[in-house]
Length: 220
Length: 232
Image 1: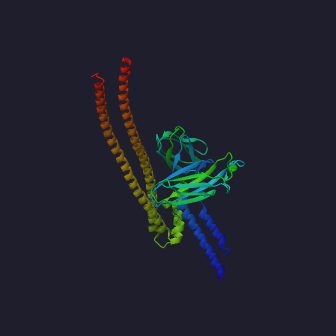
Image 2: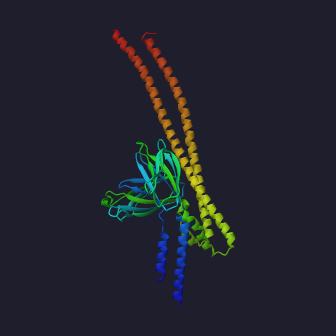
Image 3: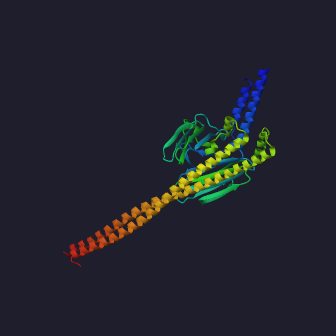
C-alpha cells in the first residue's frame, strides 16, 4: 500500500498535465467579457479557465491568489439564466443545452480585495470545449476496458454523431431563415399595396373636400 | 514475499495506466493540432486582444468573420512576440491568415472597433495551431501500444492509418461546418434587421403621408379664411 500511494499520486498529476495551448486575454476590474456559443440541443459544454495576476515586483504574471474569483453567468437562447456561480481563481464550469440556439457565457471578476488589482490587469486563460470534445477518452477507455482501436472507433462515432446533430440544427435554422425571408417579402408587398391605396384615397378625399370648400365659399 | 510481489505488480499497473493516460491525453486531447474557436461581442469604440502561446517552428492559422453589427467590419492585426505587426487589416468583414514558421512566445490577435462609436460587433474567430513536433511522435506512440494486440501487424497498421485519416477528415469537416454556420448566422442577423427596418419605415411613411395630407388641407383652408377676414 505504501508503494502504491506515490505511484497513484504520479498518476493523478499526469492526468492533470495540460500543455498551455489555451488562448488568454486581459480583463479589467469591473469588465465583463461575453462569449457566444451557438449549439444544438442536448450538447454538453465544458469551460476551463485559469487566472494570473500582474505582479509589479517581479514584472511578470503570477498565479492568482485564492482571494480572486470569477463570476460565471450563462444565458440560454431565451435569455434565461441557466448558470450563475462564483468560482475561484482556477475554475471549471459545465452545462448541457436543452434548447438549440445561442448561449451566452459571460465572465467578470469579483475580486474581494480591490487592492490586488491596483494598476494591474488580470490575465485569464480560457478554453471552451463543445460536444464530443468534452468526452474524456482515457476515462471511457478505463471504464469500458477498450483497446486503442476500439477507442479510436468510439471517438470517430462520437464525431460523426456530433456532425449529424449540427446538420439537423442547421436545417432547423435554415427553415427559420426561410420563414423570416418570406415574412419580409410579404410585408414589403402588402405595405406597398396599402400605401398606394392610401395615397389614392387621400388624393380623392383632398379633391372632394377642397371642391366642397370652394363651392361653399362661392369661388367656383 | 507474496505481499511484495503484489505491491510491485500494483505499482507496475499504475505506471502502465499513467502511460496510457499520458499518451491518450497527448494524442487525442491536448497536443498536435489544437484548434480553438470563439464568438464574442466587441463593444463600440473598443479594442480586444487575444494571445496565443506557440513554440518555435509551429504554424498558426487564424480565420475571422464579423457576424453582426452595422457595417459588418472590424480592424484586425496579428502582433508577434517581438512586437512586430505581421498582419494588419483595416475594416474588413472576414479574413484568413497563416503565420509560418512561428517564433517562441505569445502571438497577439487584436480586433479593433474604435472607428465605430455606436454599434457593437459580434466577431467569430478560430485559431488552429499545427505543431511540427507532435505529428511524427503521435504515430510512434500508437505503434507501441499495438504490440500487445494479437493481430497481423501489417493489417493493423493499415487500419490505424485509415482511422487516423478519417479522424483528420472529420475534423476538417467540423471546421468547415463551423464556418458555414457562422456565415448563416451573419445572414440571419442581417435579414432580421431588414425585416425590422421594413416594418419601421413603412409605419413611419404611412404616418408622414397622413400628416402631410391633413396639413395640406388645413393650410389651404387657413389661406382662404385669412383673406376673407382681410376683405371685411
